Picture 1: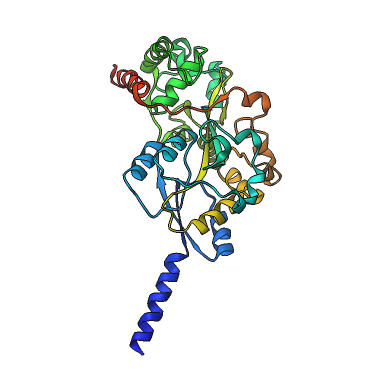
Picture 2 (picture 1 turned 90 degrees about the vertical axis):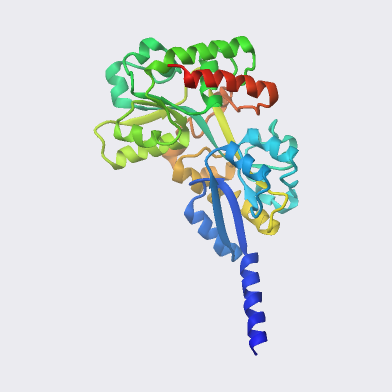
Length: 352
């Protein structure tokens, strides 16, 4: 009897272990109610682990981390994952809801033919700002000049933060100067660096962690960051009934676009659950949950009907065709190009 009981317990434990999906993702990037619905539909449990940057995720997986089924990388991180054979090709027959994805987000340079990935969500990198204060100062927020022009910055010294991210800061400076966000031209990068160095003395900090809070409480007046974060800052300021208004928007010179994608890892313990999860997340209502929760852009056409009207009206979340032409996805940098950018960035960070 004891042997039988032990066997039953082991079988139960094994079944429980089998019915767990492990997702490696950005923090706060799946609506809790969506997870609950999926768990109910698949009779399984979802366990999430989080990363704060693509470099962190790539380093962990490259070092041999195992146990994850689904990962959600930004576009430029897709080629390294494929090159290192860390992800598996997708069986599109198991993903009928892929038909819901906007064709404009398919077949990217990072994964031609979407052999390994499918778009999940996107953000734009832009400026969030204290609308009340900027109106008082007579400063327009529709240009990168707000964070790069010393004449404008003199009115806001110590009240501006930029991301602690070399690619994003240089991309903004390149676009401000009329260049491509992906330029590797030494002269253009030098010009961008000069622009950054002239502006740096007026900035409060390089901040990728707490700018939502700083903007919401009024400690800073302009923040360089991600659209979903700025959406949260607006909501937080309203909830706290601040005496000032927080807003955000795109810049006329152009902005960067970060498209996050779902991929199944090569050594996924439960690829069957991974496919069910991906297909579930591509259903219109499920895809809309994330947009309604954090204001993330949505590449899913079937989701539009379920998105709140006030969110659909935001160009930074639902860009129209003309706006899409001004958005650029950052390319992956490797070898000499990456080393050169790192040298320029080191000078920026260490300069007084």
